Length: 393
Ligand code: PMP
Ligand code: GLU
Image 1 (cartoon, helix red, strand yellow):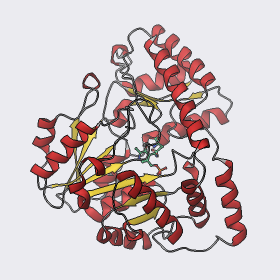
Image 2 (cartoon, protein in one colour):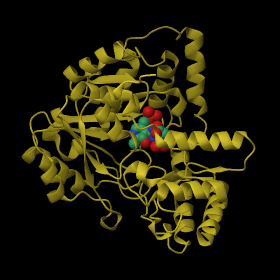
Image 3 (cartoon, protein in one colour):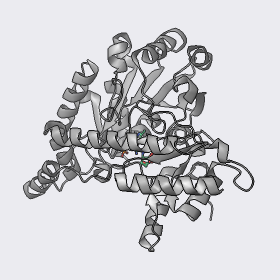
Image 4 (cartoon, helix red, strand yellow):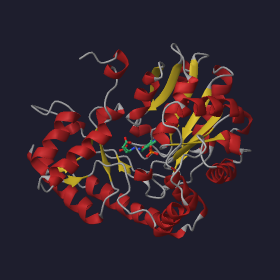
């Protein structure tokens, strides 16, 4: 069968593939410990589920406005205006089926062939693919653990030009957990002002902004208010509120762009699920305690995972400041038949029954991503298995 060139060019999501493989093995009775999943293991807080049940009783079973219900868009506009010190109206907000869908709509509405999307790496698996799907060229700016994954101004300046349609980053980062401080964001803003064009946008993926354990999360909107018309905020409820399966993400952008994205969405998925939008509204306007309790538990798990990794001779690991991933350098273990990080991850799945994501998916060959969005018991047992397998390799 002939498959379109567009579809053939797409790499399937490695993060989703690893989680699915671990789930299949578990279902077939294999005692596998999943450290691959990029989703909280907690259940959605009860007050959010209750709001969804009530919404169903009230009849939230129909289409809504394509861009989202007026109530949810207003709540998102209020929250993002407060966080970023920005003046965002309902017309600046588009609600989509997850932040991944927001990014898809955004890049489809922004990019033409020949446009470049600059992405600091290591980066989330989906960024280069989403840019390429939109016909743009992903341009990768490498950053390194020994420099705290900071952006080097000279290297950035050499890559930014009028062809740069967007700079797309995530802080804290999936996969490294690195957090951009105010100085890094100032560097980014300066380079966009000096080297970019009026149509060069900064897309900040803030999906992990509430999951920070060391240092302070800073909004680029507050660091560079003069760039407000060129800043696009991508955010959502998946990670903060343990709501990955509800599929609600959103984006704040200039009105013209939101209209274009809404037209794309109106001809593809229509609105995000009505009941999920009601749940997201309850999440954004409800109590903070359940969120803070999850954050504290993630922090304890983060410290445990870093400690376990550092105890394995030959493993180097950057201390993550946020999100829920550790990203160790495993290059010391690549030898013989274990030629690369994919072979290493496969060997660890076969021999140690732990699922991790190979670093090459995040454009960092020789590394691996381990998620600590799982119980302390799983982290201890999984890392003990990993230590044993790595010493026996
Ligand atoms: N951005 C990053 C960096 C992510 O890790 C994820 C996780 N899937 C997303 C966006 C999208 O999340 P969702 O589509 O569940 O809102
Ligand atoms: N973002 C998560 C991850 O990186 C979930 C899976 C996905 O959407 O790619 O694992």
